[in-house]
Length: 124
Image 1 (tube, helix red, strand yellow):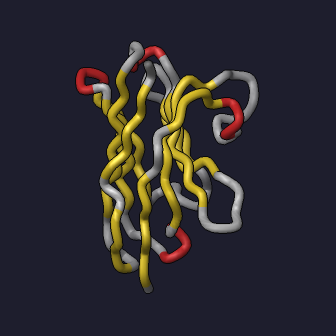
Image 2: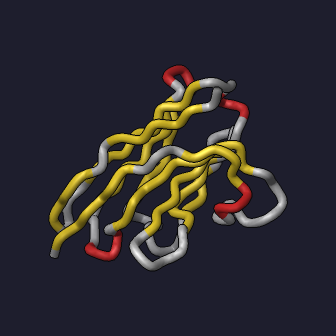
């Protein structure tokens, strides 16, 4: 079955960096659009970054220039490099796969599979 497992979260001070990983299994990894999402307490899940099958990337305005999404198809692994972290980046971060095309990449309801999440906490 399809499984997504995130890792790499933790606590960091503002201005610091973290690198999240998401290992996928149970499907042909390179054939699907993948995304990173985050959800803070009391807020809706929001799209952070997405990467298409051909490697094309997209970012939310709030992280553009600070975060980088990438993937290693040979290792079935998705990455999110997060630099210049801010306290407002604090959230649970999820990777997602099997996006249904048609609406915005950031529409979380259009992704079929999700990881369990990894917590990122940024202190000022």
